[in-house]
Image 1 (tube, rainbow, N blue to C red):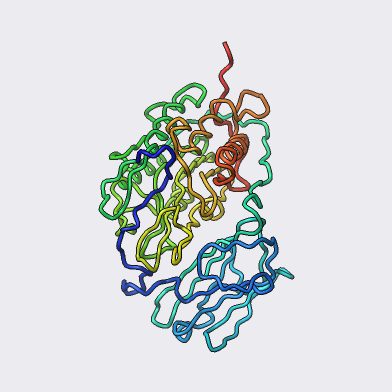
Image 2 (image 1 turned 180 degrees about the vertical axis):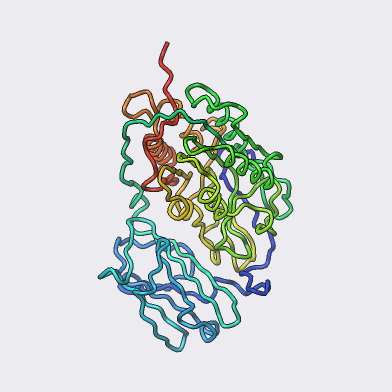
Length: 434
């Protein structure tokens, strides 16, 4: 791409795949989103089928979900699952039906036994259903409450006394701009490889922690295959002890599986979009890796992939971030799961480049980097030393990167960190002036 300002994730809409999801027998189903209609009684008279719903109010008293005929007759109420922001809310829902199909009505929480609570700004509503033939249906809605800055400012992460440790430091760094298989509409990127190389070079400096070159696994473009990634992660886990630090950085494409849009993947050099299950790296696998293989108490994960590709169920294609609001598209909620669901262990920190349904941007004006990596490097090199103690901690990086990216993109891109992440891990030292 030669445009001055390009999107981190770019797919052609000409990709033709089978829409829907696979059932237990491996057969392809109809459009997984088609049965569902969302209504917001008391707020709007509209019926919502598009994946992004924006309303001016901050309070939504009732969520009304319709499962339309002819699908509804083959779906039992007990197999309709509704979640809000990752938490099941079925216990607070009432069930009924009319001539159009089955209805699930969920109310706000009034006690600890049921109902839902909305967060300021963005909320993620997901609906799953399975019919009597084991065909699966899925749709997600991003509920945008108020203006674009609502919920954008999050509580500041505390910056305690920097923790010093004498352990070893390991890094797995990935940057994929070039992809082997472009026939399915997968485009190359401009600067993901530059992002990875710049991160590696900084980590080897005294200010970046002085990582030994042998302890850094750098994979760029052709070297960043799925097999190479798994090998690097496995080798790092075997070497890193409990007192050591593991640093993981990934820059490149990410997307939902066109055949099953609730399954989310990182895309590597040899990924085939038409066969993500076998050729891409599942986000859930990264969780299992951290939970079951990594012993290190200090783990820092930086994800500079916006996962902006959605699934257009009507045209049977992947679509770019610019087109996520067109009719029939499935949502991009990858970063929601990265930040909220995957990393909850004490001592672990994760920062992703963008919030739900946002596109991570890259440009020459950010030094031939993605804006997230640009802000990250600027912060690590000293600008994030908010208290002037010459140590940049995870908490300071969280605050600096988020505010810098918001300012650079006019709140169109909002990096997110998992609340509760370790904030006192020293990541870099500030070079003293001569």
